[in-house]
Amino acid sequence: MVVVDQLWQKHQPLLQQACAALQARGHWTPYPEIPSGKLYGASAREEGEAAYQALPGSHFSLLGPAPQGVDGVEVSPYTGSLGISYDLYAAEDLVDVAKQGMPAWRDAGPQQRAAVCLEILERLNKRSFEIGHATMHTTGQGFAMAFQAGGPHAQDRGLEAVAAAWQAMSVVPATSHWHKPQGKHDPLVMDKRYHIVPRGVALVVACSTFPTWNTYPGVFASLVTGNPVIIKPHAQAVLPVAITVQVCQQVLAEAGFDPRLVTMAAEGAEVGIAQTLATHPDVKLIDYTGGNAFGDWLSEHATQARLYKEQAGVNTVLIDSVASMKRTAQNLAFSVSLYSGQMCTTPQAILIPRSGVSTDEGTLSYEQVCEYLCNTVRKFLSDPERAAGVLGAIPNPATIQRLQQASALGKVLLASEAHGIPGYEGALYRTPLILSVEGHDPVWQQEQFGPVSFLVAVEDSQEGLALIAETVASKGAITLGVYSTDEALLDQAEAVAVEQGVALSCNLDGAVFVNQAAAFSDFHATGNNPAANASLTDPAFVAGRFAVVQSRRHVAAREE
Image (cartoon, rainbow, N blue to C red):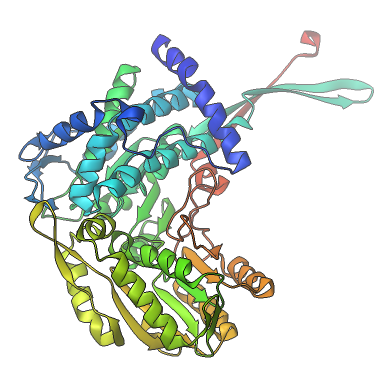
């Protein structure tokens, strides 16, 4: 098809760069993370905001089967109800329309599918400001974070998945000529063909906190390997997903494919479509990010599908000794504050030896380190505009209720406070609650989703490492941070990280934070502890989404 061939010529250099970046594991991105007019166009910011502002109070229409109704329950924690409605579909109908376009998409082959996916990502990038506002008003993130995480950083992860899948498919040849000598007899000669075949319909269950960042890897890994995709957004964060599906459908249609290869399974006040889709016999792939209850349910009931899931864990930090107490405290203050602790990489528990911490300011006791950290958090969030941008607004009332009840879980060192957000009447941000607990207290080993942090008193760093290993093994974790000027202890920490399957960050005291994971360089999760059974993006994340089906035929000796 001429259009797709043109897309391939356009995007092939980018794909080659992405594949090279996967091997080099250095810093690389084609999608600028700074919301600047110099990078996105002088009018991009205004046009993106205007595009978003036109959506509240409207019906957002996408292609799909016959609608069964409309609904929408999104509420911006900044401005109130969005009033956007979406078409609702029957699960069976969504699967049926997904399957209709699958043969042509499968037969197009990896090159054409990759070209289409890369064009989708380019179009999404051009709508990053609109997606940023949509992400801000559905997740509660500050705009700068919403732009980055909802736009270019999510697009990075989508491109990473396309590149990883392309590499996995590229090692399979289209044909081979098989020639086996038989001594005095004629050789055995066969021509063989190898077909990349998709598994089936893919379901991506999006979360409410990062509806694109956590979603794009599964979407693009499945789509580029030939599988139609149904995205089931969280009812609170539909709009960023709807914009994504709209772009996918537009590009697919322009390229001559069924636009309903990507559809959206919205739900409003009535819930349950995720369970129905997840157990449909034709749904063969499921990507899930969210709480343990539904993650465990999927593992038990969606046995016909390959499940890639990320769920709750307990991320920890150990402070053994530091080169700069000030820089360490500043780094941790940002880490525990960012997006009100609602990131899957946020450190929840900071373990500190009672015997004291060696610092550039002398040996500080457990109590002194706690006071230092709390004062740093308080100072960091003292500017309302900066605090609002970093913390954002919490959209889920359950998270707010959990925060309000958490004071009973330990000794309060820093109480959470609610303050108005400049420019948004009635909107609030909430500062972190910091509690002191003993190492033997199991309360800190349970996920407390939201701005709740524990400073945990341990006898020494060895006990701290042992408790961390125990926690990761039983509860799971995405990140582990360790501060130490002792190389031997850092080696011990790395051994714990390897054994328990958790990413380790050492002595972060600058502009890199334990919360962050960089596409093309950092693997997000390992798949080796209870917090996740998959990694973004390793070969296992993409290779299981397709099969290789071969055919072989004898070649007559006279044709040789």
